Length: 139
Picture 1 (tube, rainbow, N blue to C red):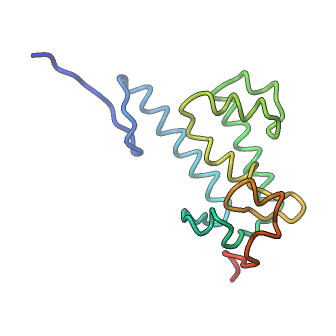
Picture 2: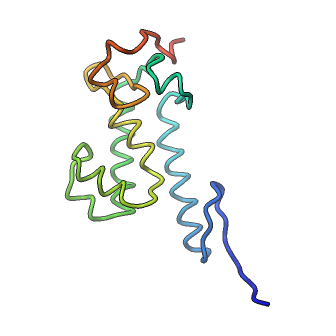
């Protein structure tokens, strides 16, 4: 019989070493810290299919993007040669099992920089007329 020891992080990822697992937990905490700057994000098919938008404050999106950029470079230093909106940045980020990818889509790909509205998918940034005019986070 052989003993196998694994380390499981709070998101269910498994690692062979404690150091790898600790690093993953750190990244998860940082990702949550970035998300905390932004309004809640509905994880529904209605939102993804154009049922409303989330209104953001420009300064919060810029802050979240800067934090994401710094965190991404920490994970993969080769990203520093790209601007966060460059396709190369997205492509490099997408090459691995990167926990930052959903956050990237949220604050870069799905964001209209003229109105600072976040849509359920990138398609609606260039087709805002196809989105129901409902502000999801309106007080």
